[in-house]
Image (cartoon, rainbow, N blue to C red; front, side, top):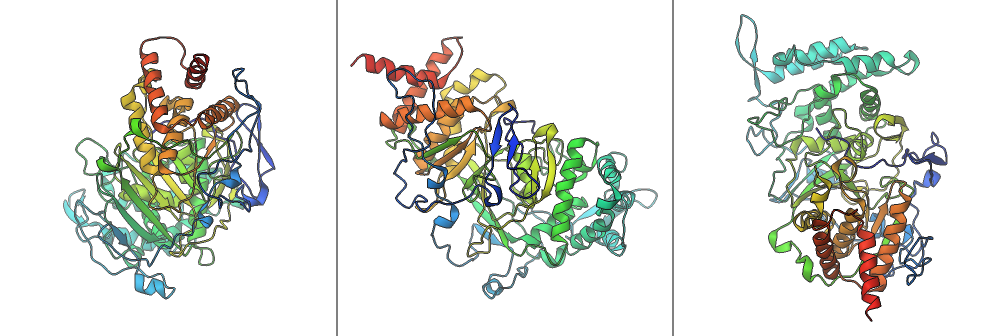
Length: 581
């Protein structure tokens, strides 16, 4: 399970009426939010003057060597960065291909209808093994031993629940254990029971919601008719499915119906995949799980209501960086990208409609169905459709990423880790593209976890992180949104925020995309990155030259036990060179 792998963020994503105009940071500062605009206002310039231009706004007072103007900045304004509505690339018709599976009927989609694509079940190692498959069986217990088809048993239990006006947690548990008898003495439902018991009766809609989730889950054979391919390592491929299909799959995850997905031992069939059934979320009770369940149950409340259920599509795309696409970093001629750096705001709010970086676990979602509650888990809770990626996405390799386009934000939150709280519903007002996908794009890239902090300064490790970031940042055409990111791989993963910032600058430069960098209240990092970026811009330092500097820095770190500060090293290097002129 992924532990807390990133530094604390600002304590709220709310831009709705439930939140105040500012929220406290962990270090006592405040975040000034932009109210109902969600921090995503677009200036008239909006990047339309070209990606190579660098604005001169956004300066802040920093301490600097005497030969550097301490008021200077080469950073741009947030509204000067490109967002999805400004990227006018035509998608073309939605269609199947060898590497793109579409789970809805594309001909009917063109006529405005969302209908499941006809297909057949595939009980195969390259596809999701579905609970409704004829090949899905379980071993009966007791005197009448043998195998039994799972779906008739699952369907019967779900149907019984769906007919009731109110269902208790004990009834949910009893139904789940009927088709998971192997785990009768292993699975606990303490967190789910505690959650329902703790909510005041006036707010407790959950017993009435359980039957609706059951009714949604039992519609699986109608909603998903075509086999779902696994997004396997080493293969670039995409899956597009409807939000209704996602809700049905997640309803089945809630009722723990997916076969072969309840163990992660070394010989398990899905050992390289994240868990998907919700049994781990229902287990040992905690305040964290109570707040997680608030977010999950609100999602199901929305998607089981005919008036509010979403009617769009979502695409999950695994991208693999080929050896021939891997940059020769030492020889790169690109100069520094456009940068906006700020210590206030969040990726998901101020970075709306940009390519939003998920500080991911290699097994997507990390501890979202357990006790984890940092950047990635929070992202998956406010956008629960992301959780379905765990069903079909194999563990990411060093040269791979996942890009998700079109997920809906259902909730607002406050806090982080132990202080996380579900705050209120979120009304997602983003526009949809030609494929009926909301204009939200999320990039999952996993950083390395360093047991010993100094290990990350090895150039092998630096290059791995450069390639991972570039794999995600690399676009498919000239009209791509800029990137919203921050302290990727820091916190418990022991990443150096300065090094990670420089790595992401270099990858963005290679990808020819601008960068919005959110330091999550770290004012020192904001000042240092702003000053370092200005120095690199004014000295016209290329990515290749900066890579050479990192090689020098790496050698310096390996030969010394002195404190490590990359920004100081870069400044002192240029100061030394200047003194020799």
